[in-house]
Amino acid sequence: MNFVLRRAGYFLSAIALAATVPCAWAQGGYPNRPIRIIVPWPAGGSVDVATRVVAEKLSVSLGQPVMVDNRAGASGNIGATAGAKAVPDGYTLLVATTPMLINQSLYGGLPFDPAKSFTAVSLLVNVNYVLVANPTVANSVKELVVQAKARPGQISYASSGPGTQLHLHGEAFKQKAGIDIVHVPYKGAPPALADMIGGHVQMMFPGFPVVQPLLKTGQLKALAVVGKRRLALLPDVPTMAEAGFPGMDSVEWYGVVAPAGTPRDIVARLNSEIVKTLNMPDVHTLLASKGYEPASSTPEQFSALIKSEQVSWASFVKQMNRRPDN
Image 1 (tube, rainbow, N blue to C red):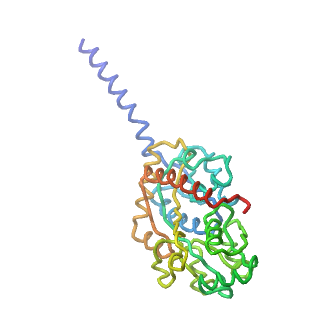
Image 2: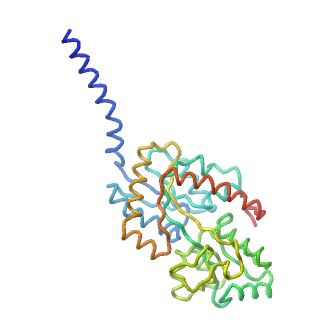
Image 3: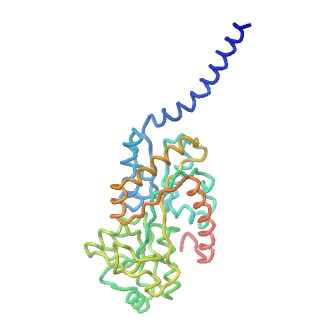
């Protein structure tokens, strides 16, 4: 009898030990090879710069290379589609941005749904947009409006593609100011800014981080901040509301998502490492100096933000009566 009980005890102990193996493997075995973060925008843009700052630190904390893979095109849709179709094993991530939500309302029938095709991991940063112009055109919002009214159809504004916030900001400004300006879409902010310097387009609403160096050199002029408050790095530049255009105060966010179905323990590990990275004083200082606002979150908080903003942007697109080609 004692022999049978001992054998039963050994058997139950073995089952308990085996049950702990998958958990131990998941915690200690991930990651065991390089991780890829898809950035659906060109190298050198605001999204790319912020991602590379974080990826460099994650490579150290995770013990594996964290590589940035730029998949630009179609207003972020190419990269987002690649991220949605990736194997949900934690080795392919995507930096989600607000245009993913706008595109759902503009295009329809996309091969991904921001709220359903991905598992939220963490926010990274918030970014303010700035109305900038070639200094030869205008040095204030008021002057820009005067110039546009005097030259209907002759002043153009650049965007990083149809359906981006840069596009919608341009259209909102066009309506509020009662001016006739022409939309010129690009595959990202860097090539658009290059054409602005060359005088091929006259104005734009880029993210502050990507345009900051050009403002310092005087190649472009900041006319107003698209936000509720002035930026610490641009204390003398008014908000759009202060310049006479209230309601233009949206902020964009960038955040990390994984393909839907990614194991919870892997998502938790990634979230923990991203939050720790963003809380590092040197990372926080570096991002802030480039014009970003570090903004980590829990997966649940980021998921809720994606869902709520998807509804908000759908309403905005309907109100603006926008189509992909205008």
